[in-house]
Length: 389
Image 1: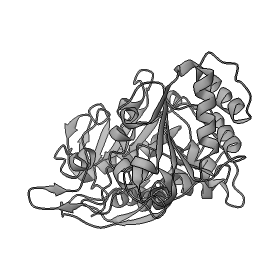
Image 2: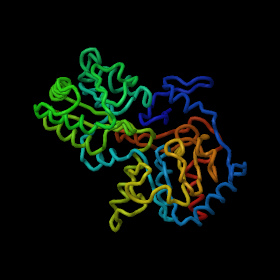
Image 3: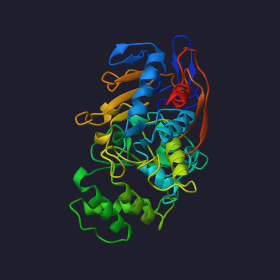
Image 4: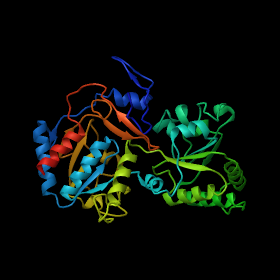
């Protein structure tokens, strides 16, 4: 089966009656989860029909609806969710898709995960900790495996570097580690870009180490930056500027390590939506890369209805100030589902629901059914809402 525990979408998982082979700890917990929820309205158990009807009533009466999430839903559910958003006049807010926008627009070079395995000689983990977020990245693609042109693996053929605001688990296996002040991230990036120009950088950071780093990067034959999406990741424009500078001297590629298994898919669909003839930037997608405080489009605090599709809103953003009614469509219990006005349980992609997803590097992956559960898929739920709103 294909594991939908993270954006790697590992396709070598074997599920037995009592075990789950080859999966990492995240995948194993995801596949074997029993933390499922029941249909709820106002924290009281109801039937599925009642929950869907209540959700439809909230959507119809909402004047400022916002849909959030989409990163943990199959591609087909995302497409149906966009249809529903258009019908009810909702804005869609995704999270952590900004780097995907730059990749899709061709502002930065990218590559596939097999290319990382076969060719990468210098790998930078920028503001990310894949050992805790994408545990099999290092063993399958980024560090340990032998590749077509990297037959000696990590011992001789690869240099791994971490640049982060803290010393992470991933940093512990890297040759070089640069711990940067979260308030001085841009200063570090600018210093590194000066060093790439063979200038002595003006910075509080160790100038000799930055010059050494620049020398390593300039000698790279096939470099890859895995960029994080959390608070420890440098600003998006700084990453783009660094990529431009690196590619003046070497061959560097960027991949985004996102928390949702299918975030690249929704980024692609919203980009296509915004590029449709006759559409303007104020369409359904709104600011598709909003981080919640809404640098563009509606602020979540203004919304009178928030539909969370496979997304734990209250575990990602402070709950205070969110006054709209909350609808949750999710396979499992979350912090948000405990406080939601309507909870609609759904099947999980690749486990008890079929569909497709787009891996973090753009590869389309088909998700098969692993076990029957009798739960409605998120596609079926959204289609029923489409019929009645």
